[in-house]
Image (tube, rainbow, N blue to C red; front, side, top):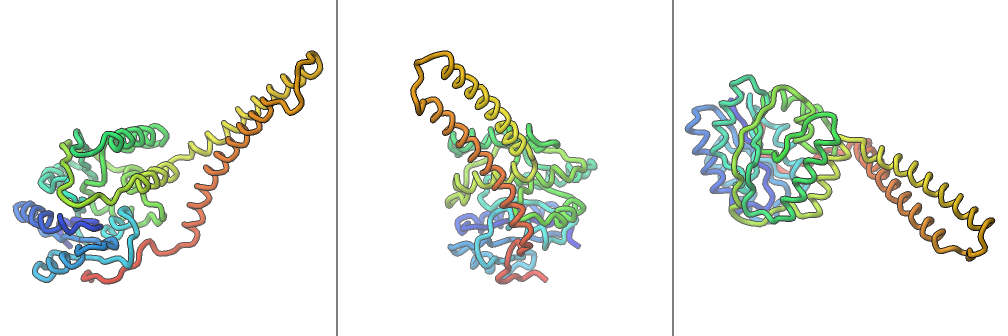
Length: 308
């Protein structure tokens, strides 16, 4: 068993792989620990796989898993965790926004009786105002509606003890939200702070659409609050409809200035219908996730790998 495994999800990162490899190798060699680098190619359309295979041909510490198609970042990380053999496991993205040079500090921090050490971002360079703002709102909202603490301003860059990884491998849900799952597991967790750099090269694979789905997965996986809000809205709308009904009856029997097909009635019907659709949509999201997990399809399909 290795001392350390490094899981690196890859999606169209041909511009970053060589530099990432050089920097990670330089850091780990100085640490004087046994290690492996586990690259997970998540259906890349560029030359990422060829570059990884080239590294593996000359370095037996380089392992790789190639997916049959794109399954998503969280699934790629999960596949890497499934195949690691290290006593401690690092998750790091390939865009070099998270510096590999932090790994020794995180590794040493675990010696203080911590099972998880995550990297907490102080500044996020090169990111648009909208992305930073929406991320800030999401994580603070998620933290406030869950029954356990999910770290603020922290991504997937972290180091974990083998016992944490073993527990993660027992969590088979399809909609992965790993930073939430790791927080849910518990154990002693702490953080170190750093300034996040700009992406070194290429384009991010996290579009706003993917970010929205990721946020939705996080909320529906760790909180029932949306369902409770839907129920509360139902009670509120029912009360408002009852008041409108009483008002309509009052106008009908005590005043003569009413018109058949009253506009406010149409407005109230549209309002109630909108609330109903929102509630049905929320319930549908939960049912969809139940359906996906009941099918028990594999999380990912491996095309080829050099891992035993």
